[in-house]
Amino acid sequence: MRKTSSLSIFSVAFMLCCSLVGLAQNREKFVISAKAGGINAVTGEASVHSKGETDWQQLMITDDLQAGDRVRTAYDGRVEILLNPGSYLRVGGDSEVELSDNSLSNLEVKLLRGTAIVEATGADGLELNISISTPHTRLAIVRQGLYRLNVVPGDATELIVRKGRVILSDSHTKVKGGNKVVFSATAVSVAKLTKEEKKLKEKEAVDLWSKERAETLAKANRRISDRMLTSAFASYRDWDPFGSRLGLWFFSSRLGCYTFLPFYYGWGSPYGSSYTTSVYYPAAIYYPRQGTNNNWPAPNGSTTSTPGHTYPSGSTAPAPAPRPSISSPDGGFRREPRMVDGDRTPPKIDRP
Image (cartoon, rainbow, N blue to C red; front, side, top):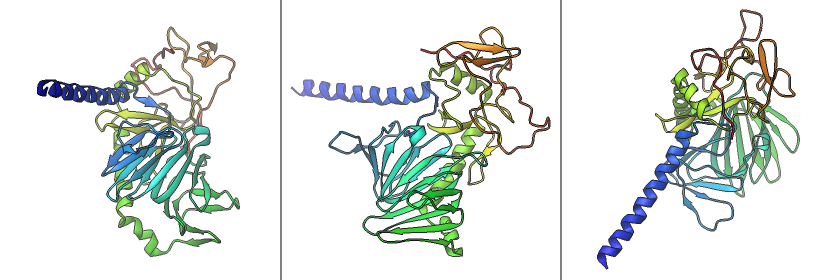
């Protein structure tokens, strides 16, 4: 009986290990993503409640949240969740959030209690669409910046806009950087941040952790080589150049997490770090000269071309992202993609 029991325990342990390794390898195999909901960092104790399940489970770094899933942290817990490419939700200790909608076109997060920070990266003037709701209010993050929310259930919600802009859904009021908004059951107040409140981010543990994460992820972006990009795009089967206006998530096997890979050069974190590796050089998308196996795949697998260019069938020259605020020595003329495979053309992507 002991031998049988030991063998059973060993078998279960072996299967569990294989399962975990498989999840990790899955992220390394599909190193590019444009989806929201990926768990990008976990420290301390954190758990997840999947929609339709009855129990809470330990949150893993390999988890990908679906619409309706909830995450909660213990006092020492910290969790980083991917939003749209370039934006991160960082949850502090003793907090609970729900990913209400994980679609990039209608992204919505509920902060039920505790503290969360949103780091939103984007080009100047780019309109984002990240909806945040709490028990006391609902708002939309529309510009790149730094946002901190603190929710005390039954009491109030505090929003600090350090950089950026939000729109309050009830009144359509715009709140710019440097302001604090307090929502209660009966009133809403807006005030400028005091000197003490501006310095608070230098003392709070979750703010310090958020800044460290931002610096780490920007460093991971700078370490992406052309060879890594070639390998990544060659293995990516869901490539859709029109699926995101911002960029993509790029998995760093060295750090075991995703970093932001923007479409264009010149973007940076609102914390001050820059994302120097991008898919394209400035200033706007330029599709490569037509050649053997060098056509970008259209959603239906066909392509059309004009002299010197290749475009998806039924479309004209697209622009997945707006032109960043960078001066161009040629007056803004479209340039070729960054060199990723030695012949100045993107690799051919095989679609399933």
